[in-house]
Length: 407
Image 1 (cartoon, rainbow, N blue to C red):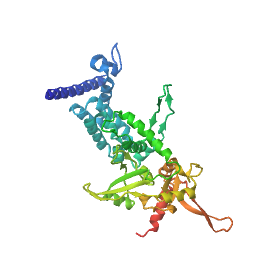
Image 2: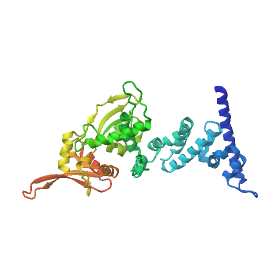
Image 3: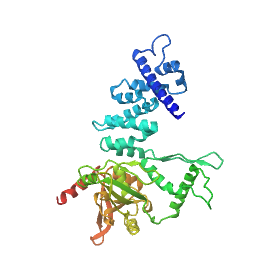
Image 4: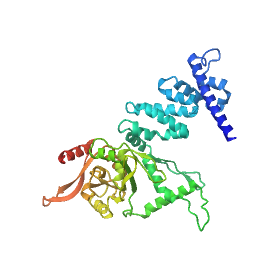
């Protein structure tokens, strides 16, 4: 029976491909819109292919129209060979159209082939999920970073909706970074917890909801203290050749991938990874040409509790001009980034709130610690962080440092 079912399924794919070919020919001839009973192409398909009235007529028309464009020839071949179902082909065409303006020159054939392969293997959902990886590999320089920066604008948590029964409903929208952070935190807390040998009968959603409340409780209990652990454990994997290029300033990584957690595989754009590295436990993993691990370093807490408290006293809060976020809610930022070999020292640090931490990295802003003269003696007085808000000022700082270093 299994073999028979496979043959029937293959026959169905052939029929789908034939349906698309017939509809494409009908559209070329102008048949749907001609005669006394003129109708749209979708209406025409539903009229003459009754099985599509339950759904699928629009996908057939969209795919047939797309096949008229030479650029979609690989998709047409995949459909006609029976590899790619029509509904998946519709998603491939849509995703390819969305990606096309964002790609580097010459990348389009590779991207289309990748979309087709993912759709064949994992269906429409897999086709949509591969978008970040394709942008990281084939997109124009910085395109993945641009998309993830835009996604941050849509991060939102709604006010609670209460129908009077005592149950409140929230709507949470996160960008890729937020999702990765939340899932990493929820993972251990939302795992099933048997009690005295009895199974944990809570649903997955209930466990996750209770884990989120527990996270908030822990944050509140920590009060004004400095957390005993890093906010993030960042595992950075990089091949040796790419690491060498990055050190020499002739081209670095296009993205970083989270590993080892429940949301492993989330691609994060370069500046996002660099910002996380400011206040993270970092595990450097260097890979050889065959992907083997050449070196796996130990986790390093970048700023100690004592250093963070010193920053609280010196900065008093977020150092970005005009910001009033208190010190306890700010991150310790490397003025010369850790990824650029900046030292982990109070003199190379500044407190930034989450919003301005993102701004500093995305706009590539430079800051420095300056000493104001004492009004009474004219000698050195208090220290403060001074920011250069010129777009790209950090890159200018790196260029000046490189010019001063011996070749």
